[in-house]
Amino acid sequence: MILGDENEVLIFTFARLGRDSVDDENEVLIFTFARLGRDSVDDENEVLIFTFARLGRARPMIILAVETSCDDTCITILKSKINGDNFEILSNIVSPQVKIHAKYGGVFPSLAKREHQKNLPIVLRKALRVAKNPKIDVIAVTVGPGLEPCLWAGINFAKELAEKMNLPIIPVNHIEAHILVNLIDRDSTSLKLKNFPAICLVVSGGHTQLILMKGIGKYRILGETRDDAAGECFDKVARVLGLGYPGGPVVASEAAKYNIQNTEYKIHLPRPMISTKDYDFSFSGLKTAVLYLVKNLKSEKKLTKKKVQEICFESQQSIIDVLIKKTMKAAKDYKAKTIILGGGVTANEELKRQLKQKIEKEIPRTKYLVPGTEYCTDNAVMAAITALSHLIVKTKNWKKIIANANLRIDELRP
Ligand code: ADP
Ligand code: MG
Image (tube, rainbow, N blue to C red; front, side, top):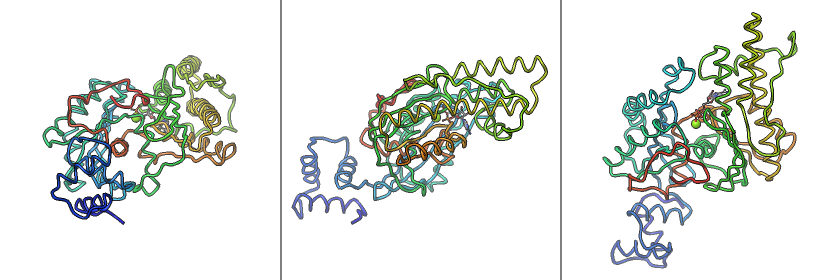
């Protein structure tokens, strides 16, 4: 049985209550509340959501999600379908600022904020046009972690929109969003994630964390980087080699050109913290090692194209080795049923391939989830999906929605 419209909810509710009619609609609300053990809700919409949830279905609803935690201005409009675990991405607009930040070799927060403020209205218009101007039910916005000025740009924009349209807001944790984007199944229309506990490796430009996930909303950080994030390390290696920004894609493509069999001498870079018993990481030593190596090669005039490829290959492999070692250790220690990747660095084909190989060899019954390439780096689909999983936290108390640059996944709600 599929619920088609709001009327049907009432009929279902009556049936559930063993009644076939009520005196007035108010009575339905009172009955429903009693049944749910609640005595008030924010608005009537919430009753519908509750009722659907209770019946194992979700009311179709349209979420507009805003994501500006770093240097991409992103808006997605997503429609959840009648079945709850089905949805449709009506529009997904990402406006990157790469060119603007490239000359600094990294993201310049105040500049990024201004760009977000300039881009958001344009991106919104495009998102609405592509989605054919649907009626929005709820607004989702990333509130942290991220660059504070950037987060505020998105939050202020979302709040203004929500107040104007009298809509509730759902605050979204960016790290959780990098994980929950894996709820998108291969066909991109349904949400699937069942096998817990899961070990999540979130690796991006700003974060490197290993997280134990016992279910949606149930997280524990097992370990994280003590200094630089893995993506930051890719970016810094690229910078030292003069390869531009962002570093990940260009380091990966230079590494792919390197022929491992055919080299005069092999460079060896450190694998920081690879053998420690914890789940922490450290990448700043690797960056420094590359810096000194490049300095020496330059002074000896030996920094050839081939050497650059070799350094990219070895840096990438060093990062991959450490990430895989710690992820596998956590997966074995916690008997993970699923390993989930998320964040910009998971766009790295070698990381995905080598981890897959390792899982198949050592723990073949463990499920392995990686986001589609377009969902590895920042986007607003991941924020919309996360909001869909936490509809209950929506609020019209817009003042409560604030940026938290250091928001942790184990203190989900701001
Ligand atoms: P954040 O959430 O920290 O803003 P993203 O999740 O968008 O960042 O990830 C951006 C990071 O991902 C950058 O540091 C970039 O170098 C890295 N990255 C992107 N593609 C690749 C790749 N193919 N290999 C390795 N790193 C990559
Ligand atoms: Mg990110």
